[in-house]
Image: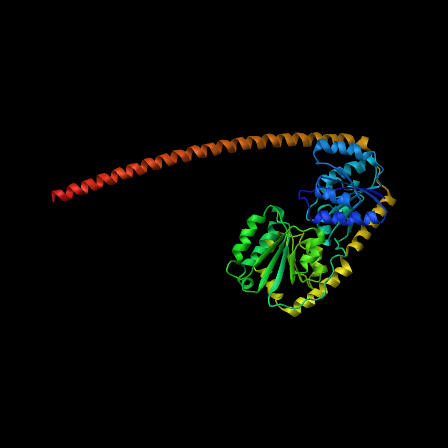
Length: 437
C-alpha cells in the first residue's frame, strides 16, 4: 500500500503524535509506503528518522493548495487522515483522486462529519463511547464505523517487584496546557484533600506546557506543611517514560498515559480532558476504557470534589496495590497491546482499498462546493469586520475608563485637600472656642 497520512496539531508533541508514530512503524515494517503531511518541527523529524516520507505545510490556505498539487500527482492507494485541517486536506485529495478515505476520531468531537460522510470509506473510533457519540450525531456513518482502541508498545512491561517502603510514590502525567485544565484541577483537588495531605506520599510529575508555572505554584502551595514533595521530571522522550514511570507505586493520568501505567503493572487512576473515571479495577475497566480513559464526559459537572482522594486512600493498602498491579498488566496484554491495534488498522486499510472508492461526479457537485466556498469566505469577512469593530469599541471603552479613572483620582485628591482644609478650620474654631472660655 501507498498511504497518505495527513495530521494537524497545535502542540509540538503529545499522545496524538505517539499514536501516529506507532502506526507508521508497523506500516513501514510490513513493507508499505507512507507519506505524512504535517507541520515542520520535532514530529516531522521523528517521522523521517524512522523512514517515513514527509511533506511539510503550515496548513494556511495558500500553502495547502500548493501541497495538494504536489500530492495529487503521486499514486496513493488510500488516505488515512486525522481530524480538522488534516481531514479537510485528506478528503479533498481522496475525492479528487477517487481513492478511499479513512478517518480516525480520537475524542469527543464530530469534525463536521455530517457534511461529508458519503465520501468516507471508514470511520475509526478509539473507544466505544466515542463511537456512540458519533452515531448519535450522524446515524448515517454507523455501517462504516469500527472501534480500534489505542495500544501500548512492548517497551512498557512490568519490572521485577521492588521492596516495599514506608513512603508511597504517586506519579501524575499530562500535558500542562489549556486543553488539559480539568485534569490539572482534579490533581490539585487530590493535593488539597486533607485526607491525602496526611499520607506519606511523594509525587512525580511528568509533563510540560503553557500552564506549568501557574499550576506548579498551586501544587507547591497545596503541599506546604505536609511533608510531601514534588519532583518535576518535565517532558520526557517516549524511550525515557518506562524507566521514570516504574519509580511510582501508582499512576494518575489520561488516555495513553493511563494505559502505559497499567502496562507497567501500576494501579492507575484515569482522568482525561473530558472526565474523571477513577481507579481502573476488574469491575470498572470496561466503562473506563469505553471513554478512552477520560476522553468522553462533562468535565466538572461529572466530578465531585474528593473523588480522587477516595481512590488514593484505597491505594494505601499494599495488598490492593499488588492485586491491581497484576490485573492491570494482564488487562493490557489481553486488550490493549499496540501490535493488535495496528494489525486491525492495516486490515481496515486493505479492506477499503479492495472495496474501492465511491465515484464522485465532481462536475455535478462543483456549483454546490463553489457556493459553500464563496459563502464561507464572505462569512469569514463579515466575522472579521465585526471583530475589528468590536476591538475598536473595546479600545474606545478602555480609553474612556482610563479617562474616567484619572478624573476620579483628581476629584479624590481635591476632596482630600478640601477635607484637610475643613479639618484645619475645625481645629482653629475649637482653639478659638477654648480661648473664649
